[in-house]
Amino acid sequence: MSESVSLVILCGGFGTRIAHVENGPKCLIEINNKPFISYVIDSVPRKLINRIILCTGHQGNKFEILKEARGDIEILLSHEDSPLGTGGAALNVNPELLSNNVLLMNGDSLCTFDFVEMYQKHIHSDADMSILVVKDEVRKDAGYIRLDSLGVITNFSEKKELSHSGYVNAGIYIIKKNVLLKENYKKLQNLSLEGQLIPKWVKKYKVMGCITERPLIDIGTPERLAEAKLTFHAI
Image (cartoon, rainbow, N blue to C red; front, side):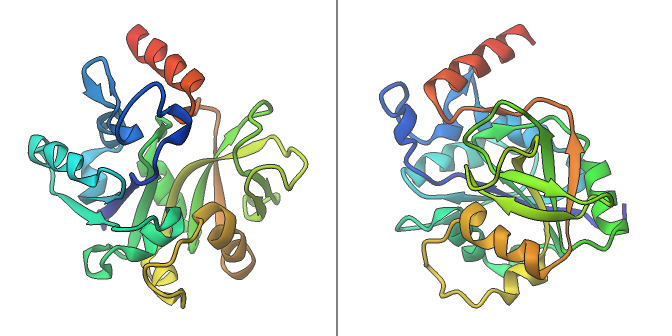
């Protein structure tokens, strides 16, 4: 690999769907005495990343403890004082901290994929953005994706706007820094990455899909949190 990348993890949000089960940021929920976000961080090979940037919001001060505890890699915090959404949080990161290609992930979901392979495909295809795509015929609350025969994403629709294509968004992206810098949205604006930005980028840029059959684990609902705890307990 010729370049390591910045890993940006979206950690904002209020976790309203699991607030009655767990308090605090979702991605700091402990499973087997380990914050879920640590599983996310550890899923990415260390040789691929040069620094980690956590986009924090609600109770963002709690991430200071994680930052101090993880002495194996540089962790920086990009805090939002008011909710910016997944898109606004990504655009709010200081561009001087970002590599030419950025690995962008959600802090409350995990897919144990070969990220080095994904990065290499992203570079070799000269994609502006690459999205990890999971085969799934069951999920009803994830972004549906359509791809052409070459793997180019031709349609991206968050939630239920598309008839089910069999592919859903895993919430893991590699994106050129220049794409983020070209956005003319005002800073500190609440934007949805999945609902507003990516559908536009699919029409404007070369966005590739990287397909995997590995399971997608997320802790966004009480049911999925319980499933995740069972999964990690069995490992």
